Length: 294
Length: 207
Image (cartoon, rainbow over all chains, first blue to last red; front, side, top):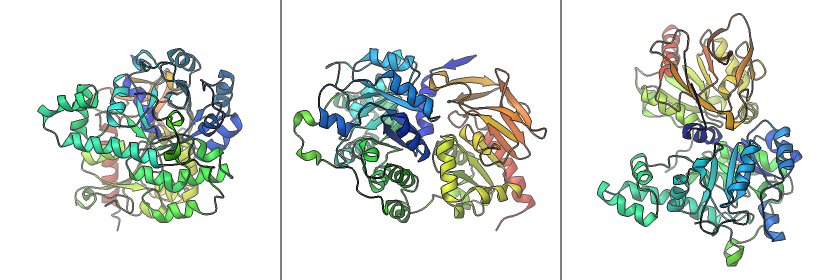
């Protein structure tokens, strides 16, 4: 007897990605650079967040031909993004046999009230969260991996730090509560009580937690690992920098050796300029991607 | 305060416990560490050559084999590992660990792995399987984008198959499995590694 697409199988792939770097790529050539630099997976998308931000307009799921080209080019897992609530895009990505679907705020949301019912899929999902309640709602909907949202395409780490500290801080707070207080905590978090109970007992999310949004340097990646991320997504930070292969290798090395500042220092040397960055506190309401989703 | 280097817990100082290294360049190394600690072993995360000093056994975890191999080359771990295995170091490799053990990677076992042999993630699965010589009934394995063993030498004993393809193999004190038991509550493969590590330590005590 063989069971496919169980929750253990869906979360299992994220377990295997731990301690690794998932890189945004827009074509097969970039995917190959990412794989050769030691990426554990690539995120296939048509425009990196920095370009989506610059170009404006509606950002959608990528062309299946481009995704298939990337699947051909590399042997590591290939992820792709669907718009929040756009379950048809997710079905298309499942039909393409991508390894993970990212229901992503980086794309323009398709549904203003409902995220995708992720239990209805065989393919696993990763979703963004800015705080613990949001993370638990996504898990309740079937997400098998959570990432911080950060503020994609800025090269500014401050939002990712805020989200990661918020998530881990709220987990620590839950662990101090008496059992009788968990129902109210679940209500305040607007999160499923059974997952809140599980979390209060284990002290960690029932799925893998990565960091995304604003990582531009090896030290950024190491910082997020030190704050409790189990791995990192790097979007515009690699292929919008001056020397993508070297920077990609350096971020991989710093993610492995985040506990050793000498190694992070060595990895940080001579990388050339980082991506052109935006200070996220200077962005106006509609320019903030992390506010998409709820 | 954050620890500054590879973690080494109290278990490693326990006289009865053996010290097991877990390759921690990338992957589900923490899941393996939890199992080993549950069994009373000392655990050391291995990222650089110095971390290999004094270990009585090694786990190569699941993860991405390309990433892990890239890390092994960057850290210069391949040659020291070959020397330790030549000296009798027992090793358990799971999934990417099986691939790392094969002739195209670390070359520690006389096997050739077929990567992602069952297909992409959507074809990943869990199942019960009989493992030759393992007491206690079928083992529950989680197969994640799993490899199988496409070819193997005469000195390799095949312990389990799925769809007619070898997914578990033993060669001396090297054990390679295509699946993950570290994500389950079944500790039998790790118990086997600890038994080998204990007997190896008894034969040749390490400093």
